[in-house]
Image 1 (cartoon, one colour):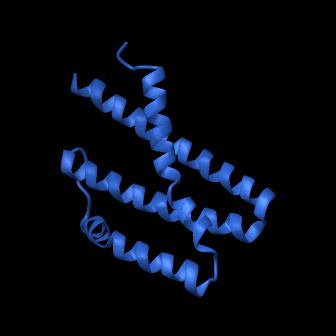
Image 2 (cartoon, one colour):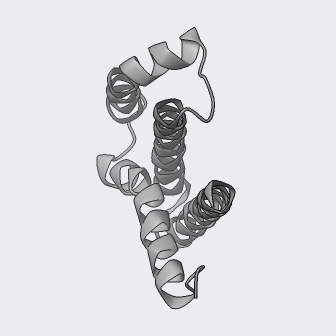
Length: 128
């Protein structure tokens, strides 16, 4: 039973990663067509930062679940990821001059992917 649950978890995470990449690329292409390259790049930077944060959360869940043991660098990253994300956002918006709205929209890409994964599971239940 535990193996089946682990397989479900791994498949769901894989779908979320794929959906995140698709939404990030699709959003960037849409913004490229509608608003130009600078806006699309800001969106991509936000999406990339959010994917790094999502990976950190994934490492935290795996550490809490005991499936994988993170190293000392992973523990440091988990503790400092929000500080690093804030500094990175400051650099992207203030120093590089990107508009904040596309960057913040890019930060929501994994959330959109998770919502799509939930809808997928509601439409195609794994344990039907």
